[in-house]
Image 1 (cartoon, rainbow, N blue to C red):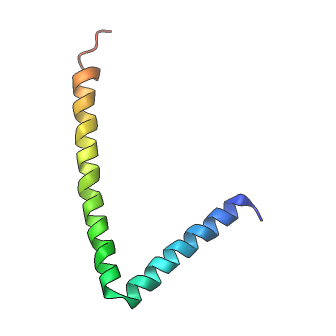
Image 2 (image 1 turned 90 degrees about the horizontal axis):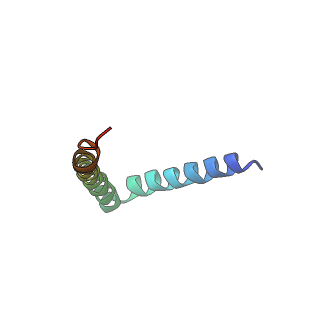
Image 3 (image 1 turned 180 degrees about the horizontal axis):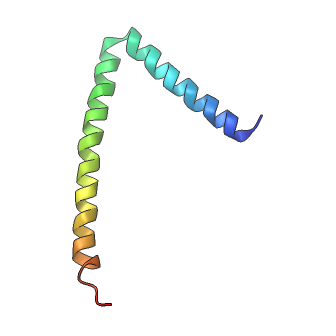
Length: 63
């Protein structure tokens, strides 16, 4: 089997397992929703940090 197909089927299986667990168990669904919500806030913090680093070291550089 092609490694690309193997990776595709592994990802598909993981997604399918998450969906089945979320449908069967309400607390799992709430945990996944909370994790997704917190991930959004985390990425905003990462982007703000990268902007600050760029402004401090990248913007003031002489050409």
